[in-house]
Length: 260
DNA sequence: ATGCCGGGCGAAGCCCGA
Image 1 (spheres, rainbow, N blue to C red):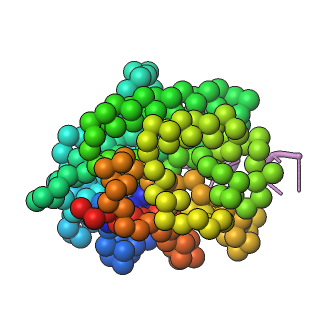
Image 2 (tube, rainbow, N blue to C red; image 1 turned 90 degrees about the vertical axis):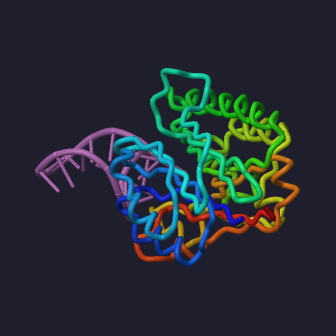
Image 3 (spheres, protein in one colour; image 1 turned 180 degrees about the horizontal axis):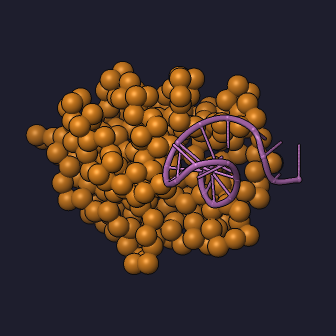
């Protein structure tokens, strides 16, 4: 089963690019982030025409996440427990069931958190604490689980072009990286790092200052696996070429193959 | 230096992202 995560930076602006990628890459399941539209404006028909089902947690203008799957999507949850006052659409999970096996998949969009001296940064840290708690609850079920999304966290210095310039940024501050470490320490596996040891593989390049042309990127889109999923991991890669297409998102798809 | 680009909204220019 091929499972991908892709921050599309507006599904309305990106629908042609995203459908082209679906046609070429043929994912079985995709976690989309930053769809930036309400559920009613999501291009359901276009995905259904390609043979996919959609589960959408949308929001006007900002955020918004979705699951797109060749298989049925069941047991859908759209809220990340722990803060009833949080109205950002940043989380959706569901169980994707084939005839023989099931895997729980989440699409998540972690708050950016910049600038760190504003309320945006504690919101990011609190959101990550909620994710850690919920991930523990999911892990307790001992199922195959994939937590895919835009984590807005650079895990290690090897995951950014010039680490020293990022040390005070909300994506790379030690306090931020410690949250990802806590998440991994629950027993989750970073699928890309399990398959690729090489430095300087990125999933995001800023639109500004020629970041793409200079390969000044960040690896911030991740697929984290429960032990039951990690045992079945076949491969994981980043579709870097998509960043060079016409009208690209600033993120590219990251995908894996599970032997399910 | 805190803009550069690109999207949303809505119809000009500000907000936001990473």
